Length: 423
Image 1 (cartoon, helix red, strand yellow):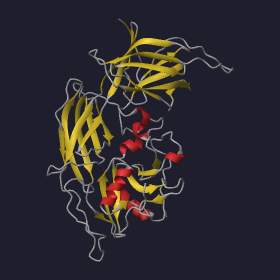
Image 2 (cartoon, one colour):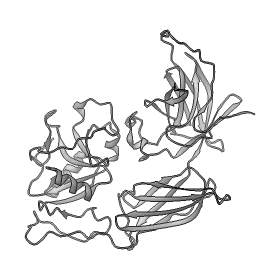
Image 3 (cartoon, one colour):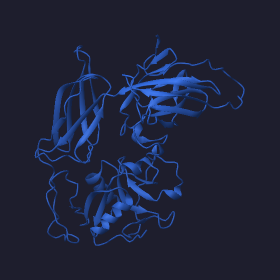
């Protein structure tokens, strides 16, 4: 087999020599495409593999992929057909396994590492030539090639393999999971045989409802992890991680006790009938917490979407949280921040007129400066608001947004008011 080795960082190969046109405007060229299959290292077809096709341009001597991309996925047989691609240089890279209709060219969740692909592209085989990707498995990097105008290349074989990952679970000393929390990890790494080859990095994965998290890494070797959550800490390692070696489930046990939920001072009367208790898992999960500044009670709940959260709030004689000033915004962010959650702001009743689920007037807002995970829906379809993990900023979204898929929590508030919005 003839093998052509590529350079690190950006791997480029050409299927043909592109004509260089300068000084004149080129005529519109016919679109291109290619088709083939995705297989693993053993030759087994990989079904439902999601990948991106993005145009690449030459800028100051460097090949740079554009922000816009087209998501594609292999079918139940591992085959794919990519059509209607603008001719020129394009890049093929792996994507996270999420629904195609929620991908967006400015998805901060992907760019920021909140959601990562679990596979990397090892090589692409075209005929008898195989092109290898020896660059870093970053989302922006992949195999780049050129498509001739109107050409459709067939029988392309894309070879992929699972990325190295660390899967662990975080629990309190009593065995209860640290649920739905953002972690602060320090990751130490050294080569398996070259002991002077080592490094350190940080990471901020999220745990799920059972305390599990996944952290992807790029290099095989020995890993040592230490983490902090509020005033608690835990660690594990060193353990060996490489393609043929995957450690057993790693459990991080937080040393110390979780924060105690402060009950309101005697002079503040708790609104409604609220049962206070010491949290058994995360201090802010399913437990009413009093804000001393206003005497209102707040609780984080699990939900499917805004509508489900509203129904659950009404069942508890409450409403989705209303944030009325900067002080309340700061308190909510400190207590419940970390992952995106629904708040009570909506303009579903009348487009452009925002109102709180509680019926309170809108006296304060904290809209995003740079929207996260933008969708292409018109503003008329962005009727519900998520409290994001970026400085606690608020973003109005539609059901087509990636945030809609991710926001599975809400904060509800009990202050004597109940939802006034009927849909």
